[in-house]
Length: 412
Image 1 (tube, rainbow, N blue to C red):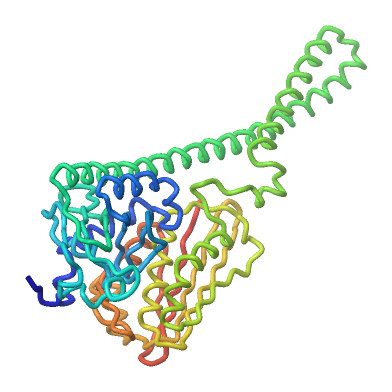
Image 2: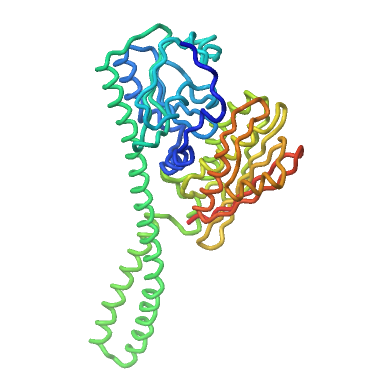
């Protein structure tokens, strides 16, 4: 049976914003999940008897293949994917296409017409609850397949385990942050006790000098004990500082934890994630970090979702041979840090009315310069995340003159 091509509206789940918020709340690194999920994707392919298996997460523009078996792929435009149909209906438990080449929705797709010439598809939604799906676990093959109910049930169990692992990753990340916070508390405590201890030791030395003149042997012996104890505590405080953070003058070079970025590591991540999209559209993507604080660690805190969505948006609305420039900086004022993020493109620009719609969270769906589907939630999601992080977003744009997004986010 042939299916009519779906319109833009029919490809958007009714709970799309809830779905994107659930995905952002997990704060997953799309490029760093494969090693933790590879056993499940391989198992899915073995159970189904298919050549290919993927774990796909779908954000507002892109399908990210966070784990793959049998094919080397990391991403594709959302509108090109089969898995987008898996998440359309919250009540749907699976989605099967016996022959992609005979289905009007997929017969002209590059993965059907060209390598790897796929035919069979079966997908199961990755549900965090009854109504919200993050993406899909899918199995595919170049030959026709028929999966038994038992195999489909086993694949459903694997899909649930994938979601469980996402939750575990989030829990581990939270524990790492708490450990880091406890180290910071020890750091502050050590600083707090160093001052009083130093004063006690100094006072004891003065009293000792005066005591020598008055020959108060017993008092001097007692004070000497206080002095030795004070020095021991001072050495302990210095040891705590050295063990956790090193010399305070060198604390900025502390290695980041798994739950932290530096501006340089964030730069590398953004290039690996979005350079393929830029190459497809022949757009020059530049990511710049010019700051002496490029190696200072800071919490990830959904920053990939924030700046990644802005880059996706700029790539969408910038024509071929255009450019997208990303600039990142950090200011440190005492114990406070402020991230300065800027994404500027040479795209089609926006009217002031459109900017106001975004700032009032009323953005509408539009098409990109090469017909990419606009889902109308990307910039709304960015604004929501920035505000949840106590940050600010500014948009400068004029029709035909490109757009500049500027974001300030305080970090602890």
